[in-house]
Length: 253
Length: 260
Image 1 (cartoon, one colour):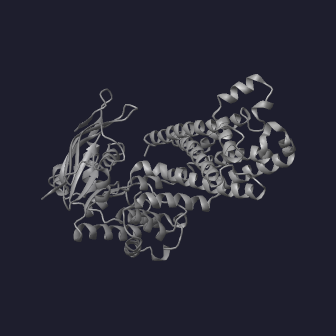
Image 2: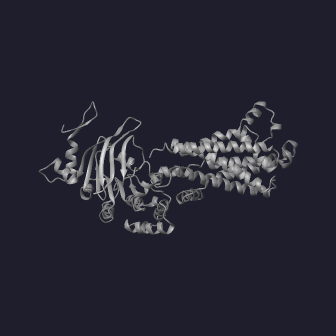
Image 3: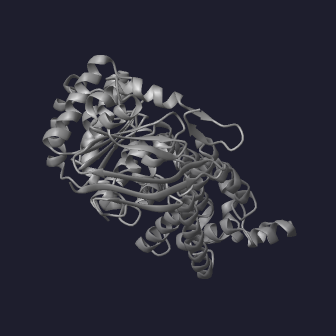
């Protein structure tokens, strides 16, 4: 990574620290999910369908999902601010490769998501969250968090660049939100009685991400979910980067 | 004299059908102070945007110091400096921080960037504004900082697109003193577009008149004045007005014609 690229990523991180509303909102939302659901319906975790990880290990993956969703609403925040102020043009006239101008704020958003994922894992560990494969489980969850964040940030930034409106970055969050309820977020497949919901959950990428996390935490899902989710996330994150970069080419200077 | 900027048969048509450039040919030599003049919508900004790699041409060729900007974008950005019409500032950064960051973007070390920032703060008389956020600067100081940013990497060619809009007379005086010194002593080639013709008259030695996407005159400012009114010693503004008024846009073919 060139010096210019590094300082652009650092600038994106500093901007997030100075204006932390979006990542903090994602973190608070995730913590809220974790605490409220575990406190409210954590008792059902003793049912055999939840495996031996308890409800905490079952519900924890949604915090990873929602964390990136919160942060991605802020994706493009730096980009948008730069475009509104005209500073993006100044950056555009530097020798820095132009794709870095788009990717660097995305990287900053992703780094912040991974950082907060680490904090959530620590909080979970304090409350007894199991890690089936020890440190490797942590690495695996952070990897999933990173790829999921890139996916959401890329699409959010791309839409923002195309529409020129920062608010439109929330379209991605709004689109993903229903997917949470159409998957195995709150109950394992064995307890989902509706056949259509069960069928939809199989075609829902969020299901695979949740189950991959559960495999890493309590080993309650097969390893295949982890591999499938990694393939899905690599594909979606690649597509989102391509989308963001192609959107950057359409910016009117 | 060595050619610094060479433009050959440059054409650009926007998606909305506007033919902004209809085959521009232009040569600017090293160290010249060149004014690109013309009415609003004539194609000046489009030409500058293409030269500075902000937008792409449809056809034709451009060379800056013999380099094709489209194929050597990074190299060209190090060679040129651009100060456009709008202030392109990060409102949340201080004057000093934004200058240092600009230096770092151009590959300077932290120390080099800090030294250069100090030089430019002195040069553009922004010492008292050093620690102020750019959002808190006056309009004139914003323009000065904006122009200082274009000079951080010591460009060999400086594109100035309406650079003094919003500056008070004192700020304009300071600005032109700095720019003309760069041209005179550092041999920086200047390409200026402006509607303040007294500025072009005072500082530019060469000019081009662009109307409706075509170059109508290119050469010495003095020659342009002579061409318009051989017997009188007119200012550039008077010559420009006299020349521009002699053009009328015909209703049907949307062409400008001289002498109607």
